[in-house]
Length: 170
Image (tube, rainbow, N blue to C red; front, side):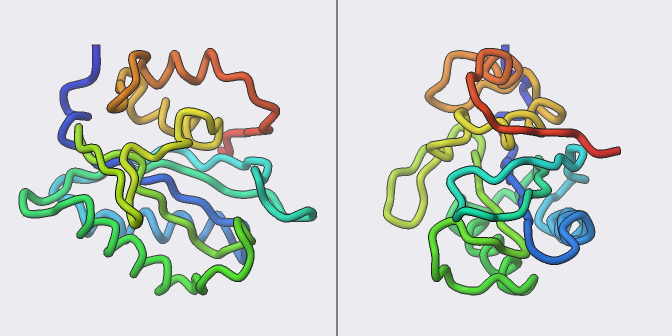
């Protein structure tokens, strides 16, 4: 059964593989707290292999933050805030798909909301296929059932068949 608090939460996946990635992800987590009415739940940092990235891409540092958005927040306004934060941390417009970047913030879910627009798909369409999302998400919301899924995050992670290398950092 889903954790009830997860139904009103927004889940953000953080990633970085350019610059001092652990520092950047930790700093971004602190900034995300300003978008949450209660302190966010944040996962550990995870070092992960690049997935669907150009050859020679460095490993990523990934994490997940569970935010508790203000009542007036929508998925679209939160996405706008996340993209502004990416730019503030030095993210440039994409030249190559999945290229290295100082900060990547993906809105994985926003409560039970679903979207399928050119600018936003909720829940994130590949979150359940990515160990680098599910491993940190299982730390903060193991019992969460994402919209459109029937299994809890911990069960999705346990059944995932993937060659991704993930290692939780201390």
